[in-house]
Image 1 (cartoon, helix red, strand yellow):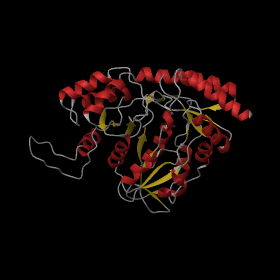
Image 2: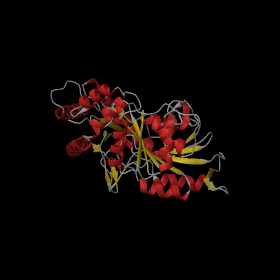
Image 3: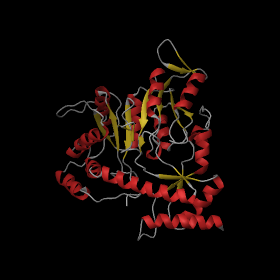
Image 4: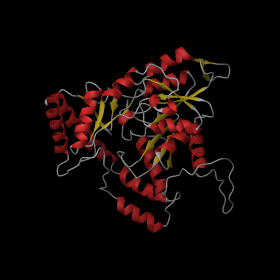
Length: 384
């Protein structure tokens, strides 16, 4: 009874942040800017597919926001991650180190390359890949061979890339991860799908590694329904990304010539028009979300429920706010109560190493990942 009363109080407080709504979604889009005007303009231009001025504008805006030299508009975040791994040189039977506590898209993209995921643990405070766990794994299982590449001594496969994730918009310790990857000649691909508007040590997420990716899915801080972006400071990466994502078509006035296997991955101009209008409001959205996080933090301190906050040196966008319960039973009880009482909440994703596709993947000690998976709940985090 005490537990139910506590859950009722939490749900009522969440509802008080979103008055006049019977149902509180986890993260709803907000369209308060130039979205309709830009969409109409794009339609009137007749350039509604992957060629259009809004695609170009979107890429310029992403460079301005992230500080990257180049940005490539891509149809969604998963495809952006797939392209990033291709650019990083991941091929059949390579290994890619990532975290088990991630969304399925991370491992799907690795699988599209016919590569093998290897899972290391996360840090509890960032929920992102742990540099200590990464280094421990490499010291124990990896070696650099005469060709300059790192190989897994158990599988004899090349470890070509590492994909840390800025989970729920909270930056991981990307500087330390980058140093480790450089030491072992492993390409660093940042999964920044959830962290647009997040910074670590004054640098925007996604620009520390050779390439970073973002998502603009319907539930993200900034959305265009479906969309993604790849950012890089490498001009050859950017050039190749644009070529491959446009079916590897060789430019010509009228001939259809393709010089390698390509992909239909470019973002349509209609989506880009919506994205540009949303990006204009990014700073407002992030400040609104950070204000909500501050309110939640104060409330949950009084309730003696752990609330996840940004780590030192980080400025998070608080895409999804997170609270932690004592154990899986208490977590499930709250999930059941809140979702039955008009407040949408969700646990963290099923850990990747527990899914049937990846159950045989090599993994390190995943104690922190499992600890978080048993306790973490996302609560409503929409811009108000």
